[in-house]
Length: 331
Ligand SMILES: [Zn+2]
Image 1 (tube, rainbow, N blue to C red):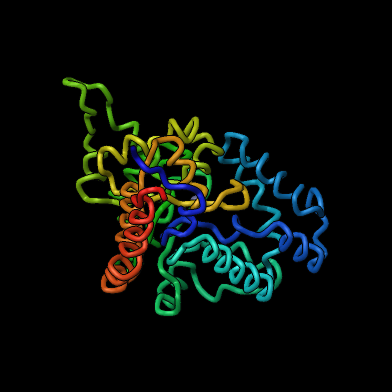
Image 2 (image 1 turned 90 degrees about the vertical axis):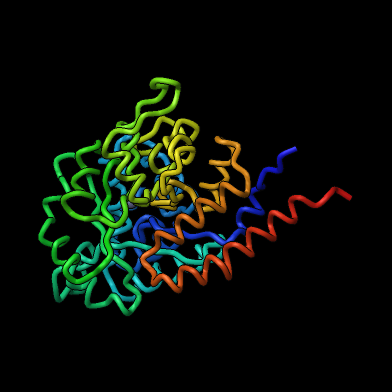
């Protein structure tokens, strides 16, 4: 009999999160309080439960553009040093409570200057300036159609010259060309989502084995990490359901797949919840969840020795304990 990880146990497993947006993970009550402090009167309700549900319904619209519109509310209340510090601290608390042992949380400094905070420099330069003070990497995000990553080629070339790490949102709202540009023109270390790489894989070809096109083969050969966010991808229409999400095939083909939350508030999720949904959809066991976790740790923008330490000192022992517990005979 195979033993399936249960939600409570998944929460205890040491997990790695590479793709989570600070302005997409606020606690609803915090959003209400910060809106009150800032005199922001455009929230649809001041009841925390109703607000959480409002975000979930807007997110589940099947359109990346509509999904992104809901961020106007969260960004509006994150315009002061105190507000940003509170949101960041609560994010760390919430992730730790969910069993996340290492996280790379993104935010866009240029969206938080309405209250008088300043940038000082271009964003890519800010990243390089603060890379030894907790800034792990650089990313671009937003509607992909009509906004190819090559629009920011100067920034990516600068980051490459500075030996800095970066990831690019691609292959979520737009297809293979955005993935190709992100990797072959911009030199991305990782792909945010990358779901549409599936368009370059023909299933049931020849003797029944999937056939990889040149771009898909390149992504797999080079072990380019895919920061997949199953629930968010369903919400924005990049996948029809979690059960039909390309992550199932990509995992079977041993792409460097990682599991992420994207926006915990909008998608009403957590990393444990994402794993729980994948277990239900694909019948994954502990070995699969550990594989996703080690993939993520290997792909983190953290020095190699620190990644190794977390893999050998935290992830493997943590999963070994959970597997051992699961294999115990019933009393
Ligand atoms: Zn994202």
